[in-house]
Image 1 (cartoon, helix red, strand yellow):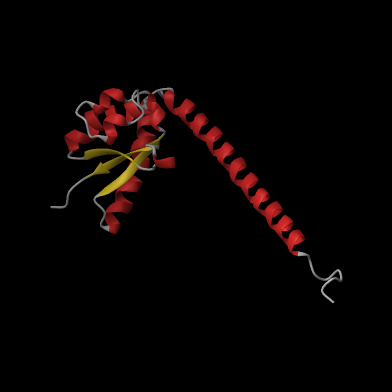
Image 2 (cartoon, helix red, strand yellow):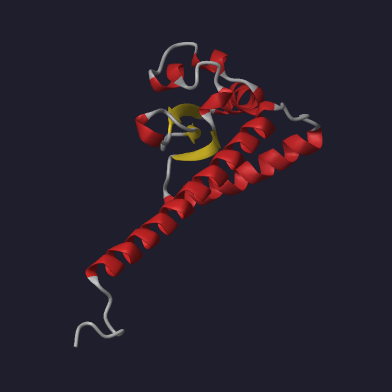
Length: 153
């Protein structure tokens, strides 16, 4: 009765399981490849400083105001304002990860511009800036996050 076509042999079942596992592994590898390409494209885009025209600054300010108001309504005292690959740090995020003095000097491209905007416009208004590694792929430092901070009075 077990030899008819309604049942798989143990070897057939194992073969079927291996095919499913290989298909899942291929999906993971394909997704990782797409993520790597997207990350490289993002790094390339963010490595190019943007032209900070009055219009661009107004747009940035407007988006930031919306995020700040939403955070305040939630009772938060910080928001992530930028996330970028550690490739945009000359030391791949080492100074940020170790909270070394002078970490801003390792920034390049748009992250550098974001830091300078904070330093020149937001710091005088009482905002703080935290930089930290926000993910750890394979146990290694990954993306950097910039967090705008403020305190409750």
